Amino acid sequence: MLDSLAREQLEIALCGGVALGLHGFVRATKDFDLLVREDDVERAKANVAALGFTLAAAPMTFKRGRLEETVVHRVSKSLGSSLLTIGFLLARGYLAEVWAGRQVVEWSGRRVAVVSASGLIEMKRVADRPQDRAAWCDSRRPSMASRKNDTAVDMSPSAIERRLLELSGLYELCMSLKTARPVRPPSDERKSDPSPRRERG
Image 1 (spheres, one colour):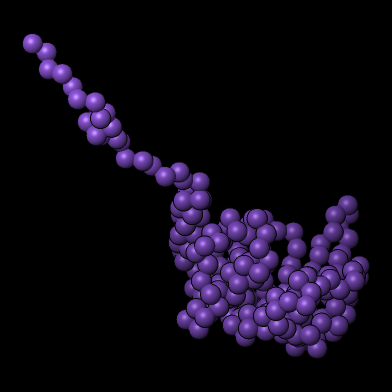
Image 2 (cartoon, rainbow, N blue to C red):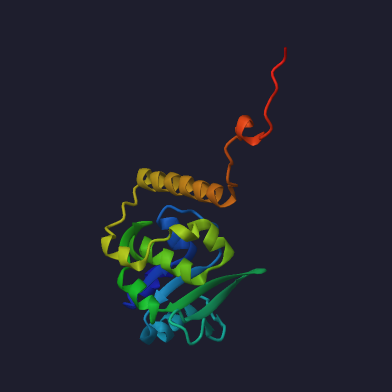
């Protein structure tokens, strides 16, 4: 699919679960989510239709009329009793900034564009689903301003393993902070008992 889009010189940027995996945060996913320019979406759908993605749904709009409005074109391919789906997200509105910050990485012997880590975090913040809040620890998300500091992604196996361990540790820390209860210091018995004590004798 990526090779077919590249042959037609259709620019895309991987996002969603596949992009999370490329950044070292592995998550099970059944679909491909791609950012694409609005002017290219019909060409992209026609391109993947030749690969069997002929089941097209009507375009869906989320958060309509808001700054975070997101438009998705979904096309699917039948694989027996299941469907493989591609979601083309239009790179407009706030996603135009996410698109501008995309990066090129090596994946399976090819160079592909992928949404940056800060761009993915911004998309998760906007989606604001329970699984996104848990995974990214809502109160610790950086803003899109940090996108300017993004650099080329090291995709070597050791680098991916290191990032995965770091993210797993951060996730566990965030969840522990969310569920922690305040601990009261032990009370001073002498201060808590106002009645004077009598000495024996």
